[in-house]
Amino acid sequence: MKFGLGGKTALPAFSGGSKVTALERKLERMEARIADLEQRLARSETRFEMSVRFFEHRVDQIYARILPVLGRETGLFAGPDEPVAAPPLAAPAAPVALAADALDWAADDSGGFIRPGRYVAPLADAGFRLALGLVVERDGVMELQAGQRGAAVFGPYKRLSPGSYRFRWILEPAGADDEAVDLGFDLYSPSTDRVLAQTRLTGPVDGERLVELPVTVGAELSGSVFELRLHQHGGGAVGLVAIEVERT
Image (cartoon, rainbow, N blue to C red):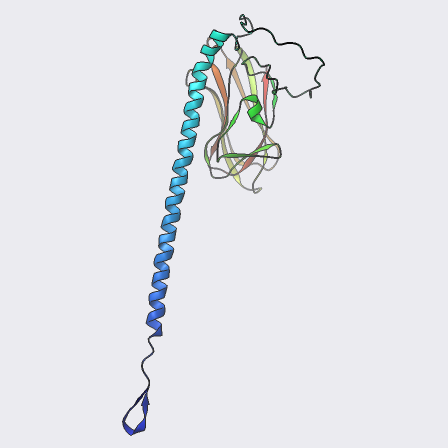
């Protein structure tokens, strides 16, 4: 405080406004830096997930190529009319009761073939794969996450006897009622790098939905292994209840 002429006092000018402005600028710079770090982290996570998916896909391709060789060498994956080198398994002491629409994949008596039947969770027991970050299994349902891209469910890398088939994916809602899905379905052979048949589903899934894919497998593909693939194309969340295989 200062005394001026006539005994009047003069107060110093208040500089708090400039200090607040400087603090606000610092906060803005910090927020911008945090946002930049978050974006970098998101890109790193995306690159990591893409690397994991690429690695899984390469492993699956290698597996698909060596499976026919193992089958020829060991006889474990011989076809219906081919000799089996391995000794037969002993019959169980007592019959095991199974549901009419299910297969006992714990015992895996498929002989390396995709057999007609209904495949439910856990799909891994039948040789199917669930992509990391794309699908989560909850209460017996495989839930495809919203906004993701890639092959969410694939496998089982087994053979198909020549003939006509009808493949079905049974879906149910998992997100908002008006949330549109964008899904692709196909039968793919990594042995020949060929898609035999494919279809797509877009729009909301407001109840149980069945997607059907008919296909004929020729005799020239009797030595090939196959994948039933479900692709997520960035749409909404959806639940996969079961995969069905019918010989027609």
